[in-house]
Length: 149
Image 1 (tube, rainbow, N blue to C red):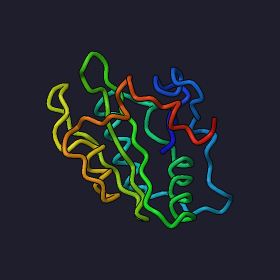
Image 2 (tube, helix red, strand yellow):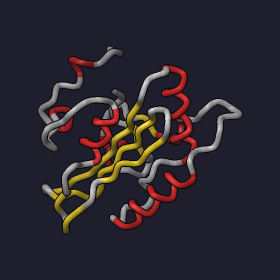
Image 3 (cartoon, rainbow, N blue to C red):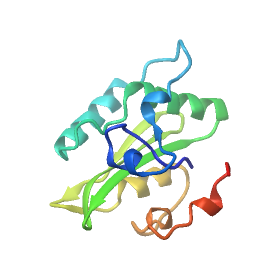
Image 4 (cartoon, rainbow, N blue to C red):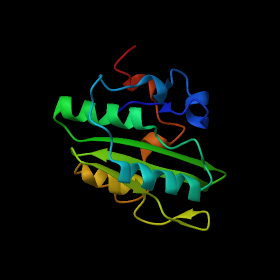
């Protein structure tokens, strides 16, 4: 799990210490192009929730796919934003090795089940019975679990 990867303009990467901007994560030269249909779905979702600029760029998506293929393991990228309890956006990209978008549908400002996190983790054979996820809580002790101290 990598913490703090996102858009240079995004809320998460700007406020998280040690955040990585996805613009710096690029695949090796000659990588196959990303799935245009997934890109179109992602752009449509981001436009629908009015969060333009927070859709993962093609180069970052190709890098994710490349990491998954090199490790020969499924991989998931998840990003979301909430404010005051309402959901701004919530999506996950999974690579199993096929790229797939999981986007949380919103009923007004409330997320519908399953959430993008739940369906994305299900692709990794992880069942999250509720939308609560300890790693998203402010009280989660990230520092004690860091591989790089």
